[in-house]
Length: 149
Image 1 (tube, one colour):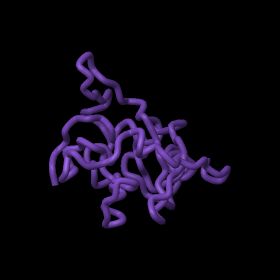
Image 2 (cartoon, rainbow, N blue to C red):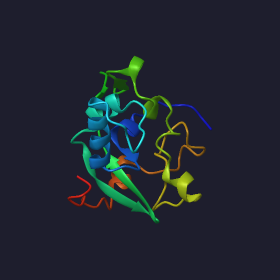
Image 3 (cartoon, rainbow, N blue to C red):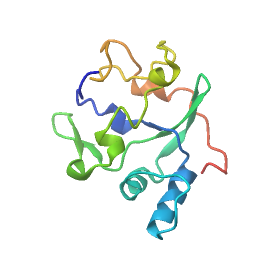
């Protein structure tokens, strides 16, 4: 396992297991101190950074992921390096990447050009020349159903 190469791609295209509706309901439960059926660490940070940012969902060989992005806290400096407005207090899904956003190649235990899982150039990718780009990873995104919105 490598280390972050500061490409920012994981902030621009975020792949999660849960729909916008489930994340919103979990946030509302947290906000009003109701018991959660789905436990989210740092939901008070996650929901504001992802709200209204879901592009749709994508089936990766039977594993459905919801595609969000870019994060509201993401930006780039004058040199093009990624910046996080809440870097010191970012949620665990960010600081623990790639473990909280399980790459599709890991889920499927496979790597193919159609289903790379990792972003090209990502420091966690054992083969930096291999992987998807923001454009290829976004191909085939399907719209959400009303129940998922």
